[in-house]
Length: 130
Length: 130
DNA sequence: CAGTATATGTCATGTTAGCTAACATGTCAA
DNA sequence: TTGACATGTTAGCTAACATGACATATACTG
Image (cartoon, rainbow over all chains, first blue to last red; front, side, top):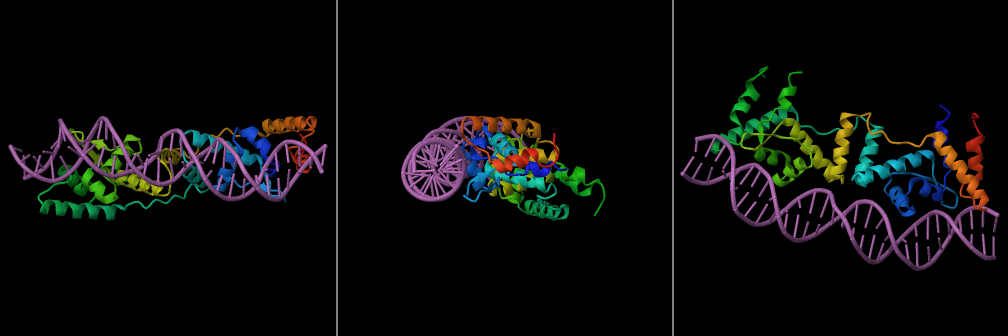
């Protein structure tokens, strides 16, 4: 695909980007400050944007309008790059079963019941046995 | 996989979930209110949580701690279900090229140049012709 | 060079998100 | 029935987010 270099090529000045996106310079700088976009610079430090930058800015605009904050947008962008990332430390079955069991024991000692007995017995005894 | 029904089974009371997640009841209710979790209810309207709910709650806790707000979390959760969603209205090459061309024309008329001439000529003329 | 556009930094601000506290009422297992 | 636990609701706090608004300095372009 020879279009790609075109889309990532820095050709647009601040002025045009503002018109194209409807964002203020302040906003655009703010997003760069927060590492959502990475425009390149001229030798005089002026920002030059690519078509990809425009897309990103429009996406940022959308997400902000729908209530997502900068931190959220950053997360979302990262998620798009590594769809398999975001490894959440899920409680393993084993781990949690022992916690629950422990809690159940305590509850019984304290004459309190915080767990639904019916569900619990099904939880522990139904299906395969361990 | 016969484990799945176990993970989605509502067996945990508010009390335990609070201890397991370190969240207050108020927080948990707040997240339900914002449709991040959907615990089932007893006949007496009391919430009963599943292991999946615990996972979700822990993920919410993580994301909130990292600065993502509720709206962002909701987006992220939706994104996990439909990884191909989030159709962003990208500016098409054609579309944008004409905008840029138009802008360039105006700029020249106004004796102003908002685009970098060198880059522009490369942008329009390099590579394949249209 | 003159004039406009941009950079950077700081101060200020409105809004609101996320939460706590507090209540009165209702639920639950023994 | 009892006493711990949950519930929905209301009211209010606080901190921070995203921008606006300036001021000053530097960069462009004709």
